[in-house]
Image 1 (tube, rainbow, N blue to C red):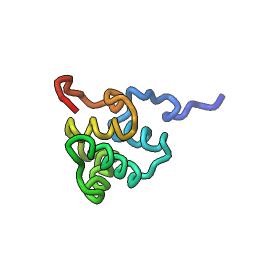
Image 2 (cartoon, rainbow, N blue to C red):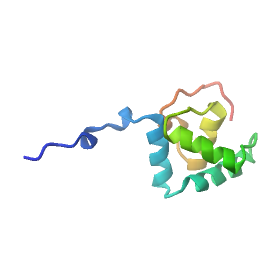
Image 3 (cartoon, helix red, strand yellow):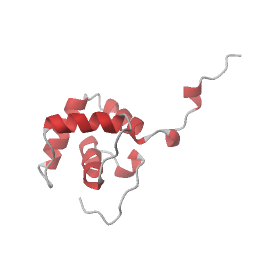
Length: 98
């Protein structure tokens, strides 16, 4: 019998925010640049978004769990990826208006 690898035993509940974000982005087959462009487009319909350069830096930091997004960015990411904001695994302020 072959022992199960640790990755096979992982539950999505155990994934960090960064890993959840990366998996959601890769599920769309998007690069970080494509996500940044989509965030800019969605942001234009709301309160705006940072420059592409700044977004690329932040996406990298978010995916590597070096920073967490604020509530606006969290909702912007979810809208850009067309996923439920709670699926990213960070606390969501239920009173926040996107």
